[in-house]
Length: 268
Image (cartoon, rainbow, N blue to C red; front, side):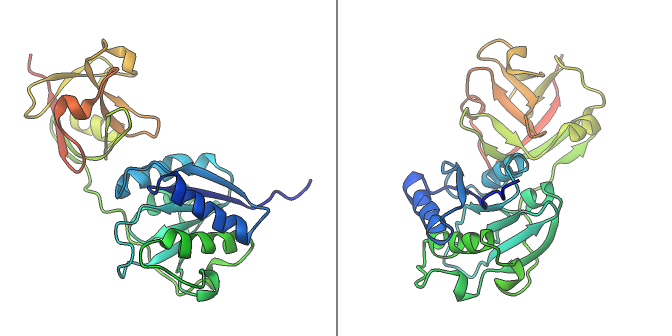
């Protein structure tokens, strides 16, 4: 069987043009690589949104080198890192928690190293475009066979800085991780948290968002409620989300990240 070419994916908040430049850097170093732009539409500066995209998407991509760039701290002392995972992938990006959930989904972090060897950067490094000057060259060299440990000193990646859900008796409080393109509010909580707060909860059960005075329905699908009606559902990555069927929960409730939502049983 012929050997598969190196695979590199890119997920950024840059937009198409700057992400295309990063792809060009990779091709310039590894002309035979397959380069996939997973997304160039992550909300600018939304680290948690980018982290959840990588966590959800990368298990479905081929084993390879995956670049994630949502980097509000570019040019500051924050570290650029590469994380090798149990599945065999290498994740490249800023050390701001962005890569850690995906690493956990890919078998856990085996090792991580700082991207500090100038041999694996572009000759000139700007203060504001590390995607082009540091992350993409490192990813290309990794795809070409350079070992993660050759890039620089060992590192312990910083975790994603997001509050955990709080479970009470008949109450669940969780932060909004991000707002998706449909205006749905994705929460840092899952079905186990819901069950811990409310016990077994059947689809169709009524809940309310504390302080909003509006009933929502725990539904399996958007079509479980009428158009324009709100619902709580479990999204395709296993997280709870607050949505409006054919509408925007962000607009309906006037909430976005980093707000916190508290769910309680609906008043009879």
